[in-house]
Image (cartoon, rainbow, N blue to C red; front, top):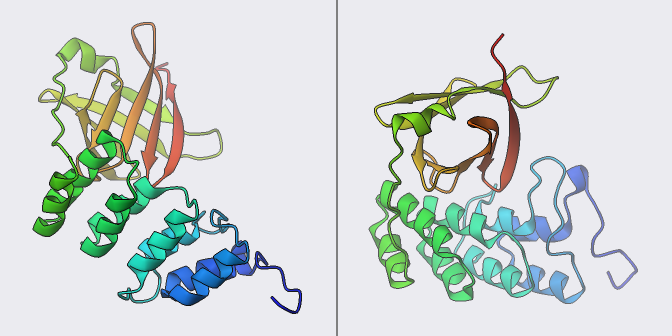
Length: 232
């Protein structure tokens, strides 16, 4: 860089030096790059991942230094701490979870999602950390059969993509199937549902008249919009 190389130079798939350093847990290199003005929120074009994504879910083996890298990135304005928390919790990384909780600014909903993931993963130490941070279990909203019927149907995500999201109702709950994967939907309110198998993921319906016209699936920080396919 002293010879004029741009700190934000793009490599294959637009990855940057910061993302590689974060991936490998190189704390001092991360510090140097950030001090030189590295774009902390730059995304690659393959995974749409930032340096924070790589630090929490490294391609290489995780090291004790990754938690400190996460701290540095967040202190320098890295976005996506909610997704990072879910990644740390799901991986059973108590130290990284502690770092993110210490940074703060997490919503009660995010903490509840993390608590659900920690409980599901049987990470008792992380459950304790989250409870101390104020995380509360979610309370499922009960919907009657008439309400559930508004969401039942087939939804398509685009004219060029043949994969549909199929929503069904049974035993007082909704289920959604996408590409052969079945998801149990847990009502948070009349339009927003959590995914029991993927804590932190949500399915949000848009109601028009007496039924849902569209639905958005959000998982791992990415969203896909689907539109209802009308019966012929």
